[in-house]
Length: 115
Length: 114
Image (cartoon, rainbow over all chains, first blue to last red; front, side, top):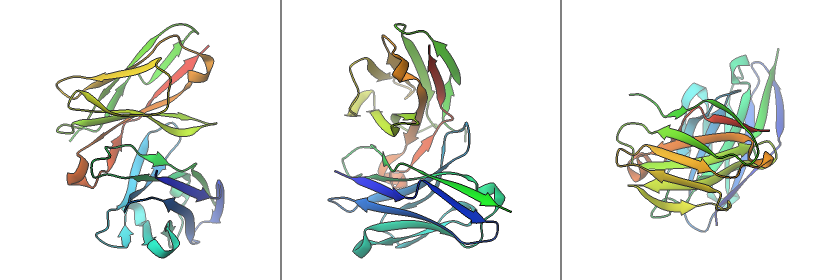
């Protein structure tokens, strides 16, 4: 079974500082990995996805993530935080390839950006 | 292209009642999945429909059911509502392998059970 673990339920950074949100996965097959963002009272918006084409994945709003098989990690980064980045971020995994579209989510990381 | 739409956006029901939530996927998407989001349990998969057939099911009681119509629109139903069913219910649609299995989410239906 696939699962993801997000370290740190709350992360606080200063505006302009590096954002690093951690995600480790567990999967018996090569996974499809995703990062989603959720703003208050809204649904989930896809930031980026890993589908084995490239280990460094660039997403929207300046975010990127690197797939590291040896560390079973898929951490999300952004070089310079902006106030508008304050939201909750979810890492998710799916098996794909006949496994259907069941996404398994991490517990989420609330990002706070301070002036 | 229009995104995933969900109706209603907000709903208040009383314990014991039943409720039906609706989801219209992105045009061309045949896979529709439903998720429940609560502060205590986080985001949990309910079920997935593809071409009018339930393809995956999460670990929820039989009070939770769904269906998909020939135009890919989907509904989920919760019978005999309990206080613990209060949650944000999210619907997502997907093109599957063609899009790397990425799912596009609607804004959700906020259900409050009193």
